[in-house]
Length: 151
Image 1 (cartoon, rainbow, N blue to C red):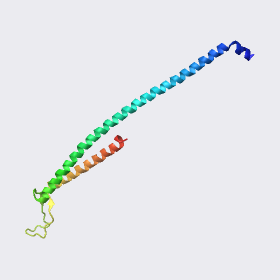
Image 2: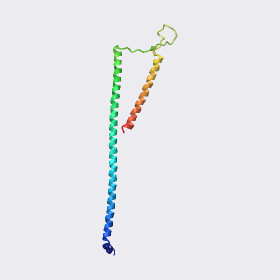
Image 3: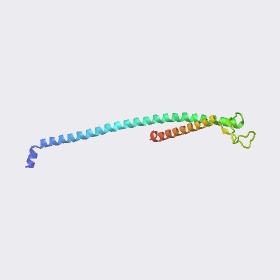
Image 4: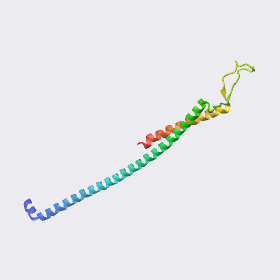
């Protein structure tokens, strides 16, 4: 009975199988097309990211060159000044005050060692504070570069 039904309706069955095959093929093609579009989008995104990173690297390298030169120039200036003071070309003057431990005058034995004047001491601490601030800022920037820029 089944054979007779197949023999009579073989064209209908064949047409149904062809339609089913066509639907499955269309779904597979659509899936492959969607994956290709996604891959193309991902590739463009990756290329844009690489270009962005290359630009950032060039910018950081330029900043590094600029600040490295400025630091080298500052160190050279300090070294020149130190050498000039050492050779006597220039003099280093300190504003120091000798304070006596006693109120007796004319006695060198009671004098304590020279101390910085009050304003010089203030300047020293202000500079020291500035150095600490800048050191902290540098540490922050180094951490920022390590944590954000180099990832």
